[in-house]
Length: 310
Image: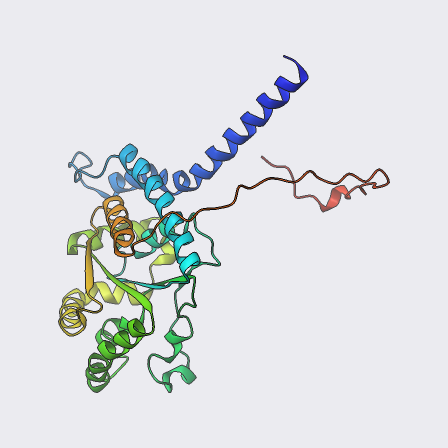
């Protein structure tokens, strides 16, 4: 093989390896399914019990990558048109909100699409207008913000756990439709998703977290208490939907027992809610690197390198 052909062959191999590495970002998360499946067998009294018919992994990957390409097109459209997009993700603990958020943001520019996952309010924030700490995270033109839980904490965890008074909840229900209408009048595109899982599915996912050292950090004392108060959360959810499912900002319910189907369905629906077009881009030409004959690269001391263990 001549030098030129060899260089081209090596370059193509490196490009292929880089593309594989990019796809492996998703595979690294999904290959964990095999480990979790074994853990599920260990927890089950009868590992031969058939599991639900879940989405085929090959179909899932094919569709996920296709939808992620469309998300990049949407991102370009949001930037070019200076759109302001807000997406709320709500649902019970372990419903899969974080998983779909990861898949949406995975290939996008974090300067365009960012996640807002607010902690419990500080003492100062508790004295502010309830929506005040959320307002500062709203997007400017050309930005998308995904709220991993949102101002609906008031009608959910705060209400069920007794962190607010009944009067606070009633005021929230009176205020939130007007607040969301105001956001929409300001030009914000607002989408609200509720991830729905069954009692048995949440029980299973909590059991997995209890026995899985990699995911135990996801299980907080608040999560355990929410499990005990399943029915209270159900009543709170029904009340929330009744008061806040408005024509200007409707709720969209995602069936989330099958995580893969839930991710694909949610992303597909999100794309359908914002009409977008291909944005033309100038052809990118990589410039030649400047070589200075008097430049000498100084060696890096070996003790500065991370140990080459792999």
